[in-house]
Image 1: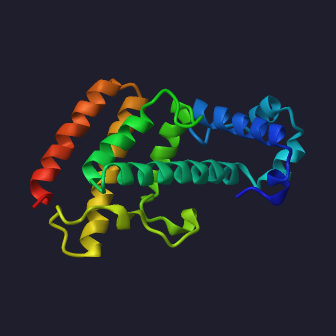
Image 2: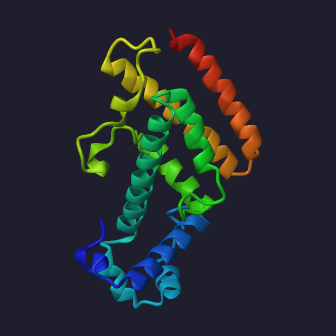
Length: 199
């Protein structure tokens, strides 16, 4: 995570560095990203980058952390709005993710982050390390209409839903299917799961 020096920067400069990070890490894979490109775009000396971040991976971790916090807030809002309906929430999250930008995260960066979350099997419903609080989003899920017998069952059910939404979103971001095709695909997949999980 960034150093105190980064967080103590003037707002304009910190936003400039963040924008350069987001742009560079969204152009290609995280591995292909160049610190030289980041410092050139942010108009900072290379040494300043290392005053803000330990290394490139540290900068990536910061962006992933920021993304997850934003997603967590959107999931919370959707669960409240949809009265805990996890299926409607999944569709709402898909709609939110497939907007042209996700709260200033461009499509390339969002795709890369979602792929990284998939590779590391990170469940944003439960990730207390990142969220820095004990609250779990699962408490807002309406479990009365689900055939869920334990917290363990709920955990695995959410893992399945998360993987499905993430997979369809990545296909859209990779331009293999359109947003509309992705939504229809997601609706169909959720409908099939509902038949097996709803009471």
